[in-house]
Image (cartoon, rainbow, N blue to C red; front, top):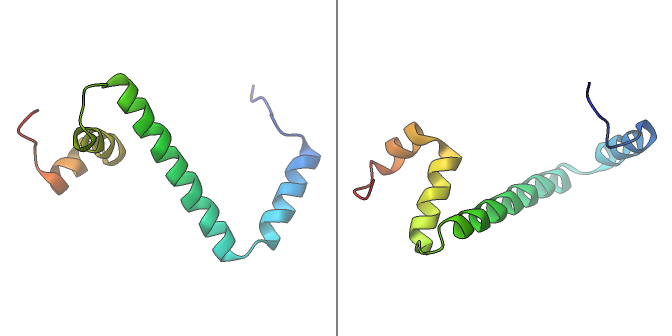
Length: 81
């Protein structure tokens, strides 16, 4: 059973707000959410790989984000793997 964390009335208000929002405002929200997710993911990687360099962290993030096949197509297999 799916639990609801938002009431139906609150959801209706949210839908009305999004309908009135400009395309630019919606796009800005999407990019802000993406940026926040990336920051949180990188913070988690830094915590689980405390001795990794910033470059290594970025490669770890990119590999998780893109998936192994696309990452390897874009960057090639890294020599340290």
